[in-house]
Image 1 (cartoon, rainbow, N blue to C red):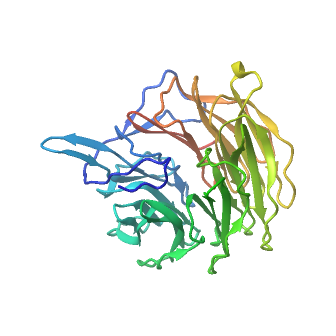
Image 2 (image 1 turned 45 degrees about the vertical axis):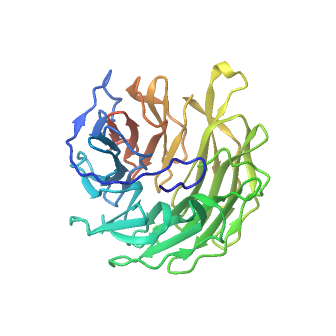
Image 3 (image 1 turned 90 degrees about the horizontal axis):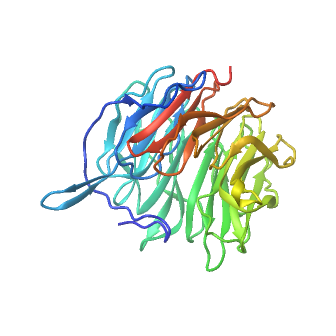
Length: 436
């Protein structure tokens, strides 16, 4: 078993194979105009949170996940197959493929031409496989032994970076990165990105030309530190930069996000706490290589999470949910906007968006989509670039979800997809005309 940190689940990895068909999900009413009816990828027991879909330049969508199956015969076997599927633009999800009989924490990235890379955590380290557009998956490779919790990102040409935690004695000892150049079948040796330490929850963002930024949380003896490192295209990793001091708490974990624009400007935001007060904080790095000082964007009774998005020219949006002063009113969703080259604007409440954990997606033009789960069901709201938030709409009424998160995604054309997990599998709803 591998334990990434005290708060994370233990992972037991064994063998499984299998296949299944696709089917629609019954809904209480027809989907809102422009949205498809929810479509189910059957997977009766999802192992861990499925990452959001990624897109190529055409708008084809790619998704990876892990299933879990408990078999009780002469012995008890817990099995974790890694699956992947592709949805052609204006099509339906294709029959899933099994990449490994033994994996967890999968991720997938795709370049502009549709070449894919998939990664996951195996029993003894990080494995990866690639597939050229229209071709088949190659045999998996071990790319980083004694490592866990991989994240992957790819630039437009297909250069890909995998970041993961190095594990010793069931504990993280730092963040490492592996590079795979476009068109090559081999991966570079793992390279240290952070100094040795108890680092976790790494996040990576990469732009079209290959500039990349990674942020992670470091847990010293007391408190919590957010650190980040930058790598220019075809360059080397910078020394880690501490963005937050160690006086904040780590109990609100998994809540830092990173974004990068086409010029290499980067933003990191995170949710932390001091005492009983929650804080949304941020720091940014300009193309000149200088990081700004930590800035507090909001403080109060934070309800769940923070999410961040950035368009190609550098306009950024951060969203979060916050409990109202009157607890009977539940939580409301807020945002702040940072125009490229300027400071963050004032906090604004998102009209009609309440009682959920928002997931944010932004396309290169600056169109934005948030999605969340509430008592009404799966909800979403759109904001055209430079415009106002439109009235929220319900994609699926009275939906029961498996893990508490609904994920929003946009391709370069503004086509939208919302993903969630229920006890039957992964469900998606699509809108190919959200931002004409």
